[in-house]
Structure formats: structure tokens, C-alpha cells
Image 1 (tube, chains in turn cyan, red):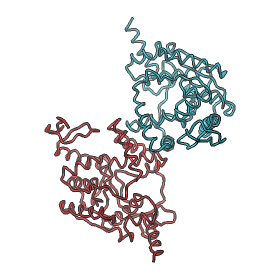
Image 2 (image 1 turned 30 degrees about the vertical axis):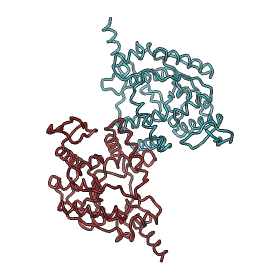
Image 3 (image 1 turned 180 degrees about the vertical axis):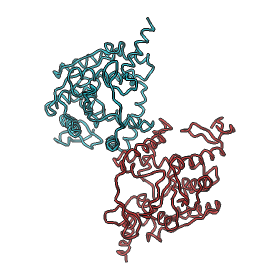
Image 4 (image 1 turned 120 degrees about the horizontal axis):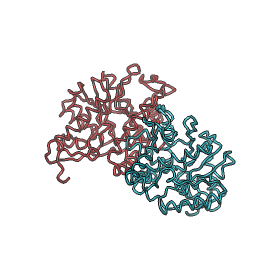
Length: 311
Length: 311
């Protein structure tokens, strides 16, 4: 970057944010980043008190934990961290070590749980047994465990590190595969809790931030994060849609934010389809399945019967 | 193409349609193409009788005129053609010659009108005077003239040659520039007439056909068409969004149809914003402008005052 200056203090800039056409020094990038999270939550009328931050150890969730720690007073929230050890070999071991270090440094209470205590096996075995894409299995497992831990420990919200690259790729894929229901259902900035069905609320404070910005924030805050991408996610089709965004952003750097905002607004104008929520007859948490067995319990049953077949 | 065979007659194939994963000989491609138009109109519950086909002389509208001529009996419609001579130098002269030849060959009544008789000037002058993008000015002018001629001659529908490459680029641009209203408003397959406001209905029978398919249909039907693209459209931003589609289609050849169908369905679930339709106090045709002067008359007034300033 040549000769760009921070738009706040006019010192030499360290980063240039293309879509905002703005350069920042480290200090004012951190301020810009945190203010964006604060504004996103305020505009979405977030009113939680006890927030459990789901931290994988990757740049997105690490940045989220640091930013929410900085903003805890401004948001009037208490936070704690949750890490789910998915038992994906070295990748998981490194993640656990990083997350423990971060929690210690930030003086944030952390709970680390082992996926095997809930599912009976680690993620690689679960994927192999079900023969489904790893990311789909992982989503089911993480959502259930996060909700259970948060619910049983009195948290009203879970915060997750979904960034705009994830969401725009997911929604583009939805439009390009005729799964428009995925746009209507998923990725609200704030989903309030539903205690009748033991559902903890969800916030996605980084919905307007790019992967790169999360990484820069980690670097500038000297926050450690796991650099490897999950070895089970290789070949996930979502990566291809992220590549398409690379092409689109060359044409217009603001297009990704425009896309997400356009779809959020279109979605607001669509009446939500009525969902028949019920409780899972096995675990007691929410499900929409007609036979009242939630996706997680179904997975668990399948793994159990596979185990039985071995013995 | 090596060794592909027509999926209907198993003779050597002349074309391979990637998104349909289907190869055809000439004869059966023509059948496939026309059946697609027929099905598109039937599924959209089109029930017109007298259809004015707007023919520019380009591959899309020429294919449309040929296909609707073939399908006139099946659709129980009477058709005629309209060509608007936009007075864009050689380009328009060639277009007029081609359109006359086609109408003669198809034995279809044709009306050729001169834009100057309505606007006072040709398109190049209109664009220069208004300093607006040529395609925007041209759209206003063509829509008004088509509707006027169709209305005054008792047609209930106008057919236009919008193809899926146009529509998907237009809608992608709408999502990427936060103009989601453009998705809600435009490009229905069938828009019924509204005689209270002198609005003739519109059909867009090629909404699920690609530019390439229209061109192949013209070639196989030995239909002449103008190969040049309009010289005034150079640099139109829509071309950039068409290039993005080139990248996306390499990832998934069905994605364009999926995208258009997804948005059509999302749109159906959105309540149309109430528009305050009124009639233009100058021309008497429909407008939504608050001062009751339609976009075409506003353009005409501006050109008139420019002309007056010269004399």
C-alpha cells in the first residue's frame, strides 16, 4: 500500500478496505471493526444479557470473542466461551490449545466439551458412518451441542462467527440451486430465544464483515488463531461459490454487502412459512421433524446402530 | 461435437444444450425450442388473442417471430410484427431491411415506424441531449411506442424477445446494487392488459432460453438477423453482469435457470407494492409519476426545449 493515510488520524495507513474505500492505521481499523459490530447488533435491536460465544479457534470466531469482550460494557452483556472439540486429529488438538490460551488471556470463562460425550464418536467417524458431507453433519452436531450447553447454563444468546463471505456464498448457492427456502430460513442477524421450545437466541454480529477483516482484526489484536482450514471441509461445494464471489467483487467491490442487504430486505417482505415446531421425543429439544426425532438424535441413533453392528 | 447423437431420433447431433444435458439434430432442436416457448406460455396461463411481436432484427426477436408464427395455431393467436426504426445510422438501415425481408417471408403483417415521428429526433440525438445511458433512453422510447401502436390497433398483448441472459444479468445487477425493487417489478412471463389505463399486456416467451439457443434457432430456420450489436449499447454495465454469468455457468450450467426460477418464486411470495397508477396529462397513457407526466413525454419535452434553444 503506497502513501495511503488513515482516514481518522492521517498517519500512515496499515490497511485499505476496498468496499468502504477507506484506509486505516491499526488502531483505527480496530475501532472501525468494533463499531461495525456494535452498530450491526444495535440496528438489529439485540437485547440479550448472557451471551455464549461459540469459538472454533479460527479467525472469525476468535475475532468475535475479542470484539465482544471489548464491547461487553457498551452492549451491557456478560460473555463466556464454548469450544466443541470435534476430535478431528491434530486440527482439533491445536484448536483446543489456542482457545484455552485465548480464554486465559481475555479472562473469559470457557467451557470445552468433547463431541464424543454427546455423539459417541468424533466428527470423522460420524461423517464416514452417515456418508453425508462433513459440513452438513458438523452443522447438525454443533447446533445441538451449542444450544444444549447454552440452555442448561442460562445463556439467552449464542454468538457465532458467520461472516459475509459465508453468508453471501450460502445465499448465492441457494439461488443457483433453487433452494430459496435457505434464504428465507437462515442467517438472521438476531434470532430471539424461544424458551417454550428450549431454543436459545442467536446472534451473528459479523454478518457484514469479510473474512479478511476478521483476520486483520486478529493480527492487530495479537490474537492467536488456527490458520489451517478444517481438513474435513476440503471439496465442500461452498468453496466454489466463494470463488465466484471473487470474480464478482472484481467487477464491484460493494456488491457483496449490497447482495446480503437486498436479500435481507426481500426476506422481510416475505411471510415466514408456518413451521410446526415440536420437541424431540428423545432429547427434549426443538425439532420440526414429523416423527418428532430431531436431526441430532437421528444421527446419534444411526451411529449407535453402526456401533452395535460392530460388536 | 464428437459422436453425440440426437436424443430424439439418434441421428448425428448438431447441437448440445449443456444445461439440459441433451443433444439434438437440427429438426429436433427446433421442436425442443418451440415446445419450450409453448410450455412457458401455457404454464404462465397466457390467454391472449392478438399479439404484436416487437422485432428489432436481432437474433432474439427474430427467433421469437419465427417461433410464434409456427405456434400461432397451437396458441390460437393472430400475430403481426412491429419494428421501430431508431435512426441509429447503418445499424438501423440494416435492421429495417432484415425485418422487412422476414415479414415478407413469413407472410406476417408488419408495421415499421420511425422514432422521429414520435420523439422528434433519432436515438443518438435523444441520448446526447438527455446525457443518460442510451439503453435507458431507448427502453423508455420503445415501451411507449410499442404500447401506443398495439393499443391503437387493438392488440391485447405485445411479445418481446427478452432472453434468460438478459433477465439473469438484470436481476443479478439488481441484487448487487441494492435495487431489489427491479426484481419485484420487472420481467414477468405474462403481464395481463389493463385497459383502464390503456396498458397492453406483455409476454416474454423466451425467459428460459439462452441467447445461444435463439441464435441456433435462427440459423436452423434459415432466418436472417442483424449480427452487429447496437453501437449505442457499447459499455453498458449490463454486459459486465453477463460476463459474471459466464463464470458462474462454468461452475454449474443449470444455475442460470435455477436463479431465475428461485427469484420468480420468491417474488410470488412478496406482496406487490401498491402503485398509484394514473394517466399522463400530455399523452393520455399510463404513468406513476407524481406530476402526471410520463417518462416518455418528459423526454419529449426536454428534446423540444433543446430544439427551441437552437433556433
